[in-house]
Image (cartoon, rainbow, N blue to C red):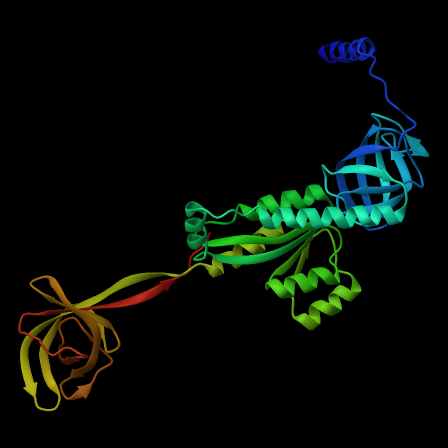
Length: 350
């Protein structure tokens, strides 16, 4: 009911203000959605805003151009022309246009090519000059340099899929590892994508698209990895595993045991050797150790020797007597405690 009222209000307002469309002028439209169809090529859903669009018209939208080969209305019927306010599916672009770009009908293909080149040049300049230097930006940049990045080139079957995939992957970034999307676009994986990935040390991700034959050959020669899938979850799962592998590992200390120094013997050319007993757990000859004197850590290092009687020992356990030497430390005193521990690497995940 409210929708009917709104439509009536729009019609009445247009009549009062004498808002009339000029159907004779060249068409202008907005790209609502776009995708790459494996059978017919790039397809765009557009809404005509001015003039009349006809089959055979030369068109430009952002950095892509083409010639209208087919028009399909909202009922799935092929039509020869569409007028103002009519939605239509258009076939004829040389590449997949970006959603939100304005489409224009141009006089001829030469003129269209010049416009596309100028738009591409302007966008490149705008992207380059967008970065401004400030103390805050410089600080953020220095912090970012410590973040490990996984470079990706994204390709998908439609602009909507590109954005959905981009959003899913960007959510995986954190303060230590990040997804860096070098380029994201709709369309098949081509030779230029392989060259870009090779130059930027990136992995190519394809959603619902496949590489061309030439691109496959180029990827093999350039040793560029291509991952494709028809399920976004599988792609995000693979990238999450890759990012987890890039995280700096954590190290966990594992307590092994303690030895109490009972007697210290000074041996020429060797240094101090301690006669001791294991009071807790076990101690291995390759253990990390710390020396505790009155429960204060005075040294951390490694054992230089571990003996049972006169023989070298791989480990000693609670209750056993032993002798030991310590690397780069000679100030052993009776009553000192030698605490043994291992350091284990713990793999992290996002």
